[in-house]
Image 1 (cartoon, one colour):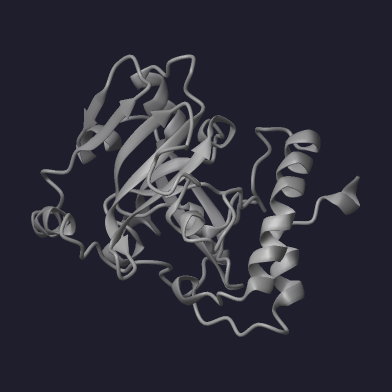
Image 2: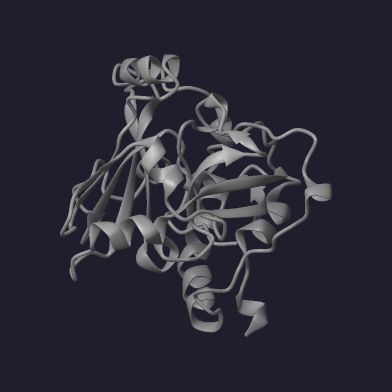
Length: 257
């Protein structure tokens, strides 16, 4: 069975010799890469769900293991039309920030950064693995996503959590978003991080809130999170494939490692 559990990390290493990797947001668009990742998605997800405890933790490290530098993946700022609101919040230290939690919930929420900081928190030192092959170890502190979802009260027909973000990408300025299922949403290491390496998450890393989904690759760790939406299906949400990169055909929806 262990031979069936081929992780994204091993796949990337295997194709790295033939593809030049220049950055998460400029990842090679080669059909070979897309086909390899897509063909492995179902196998990886089924195998991990079958043989791995849904609460199994990603490896955690010590302060001595922190990377001296931590590259920023994806957008470095929210510079869209919608991002003008973000820039105003950035200027006033996110005093006006509100995280909306809605969709298939019993109690829609509007949480300030102070509200999130007042909730029970989790601190973890983990390794960020980017789809383009680099990694870095950082310390993250934030509110467990499960706490927020419990407060909102998920309805029985909710199956996914969608992260709606303040940034856009591409020539068409498509809104950036990502999504995970409830197994990952309620995983103890899935947090809404507001601190990185002992200080507030910096702008380039997704301030004020960045999702940390430690058992998946870095593009699933949505930055500049403004809204959480509980949904029954991903159909009809933007391109319908569960995320910006998934919609444009570059990455698979499930990025488990």
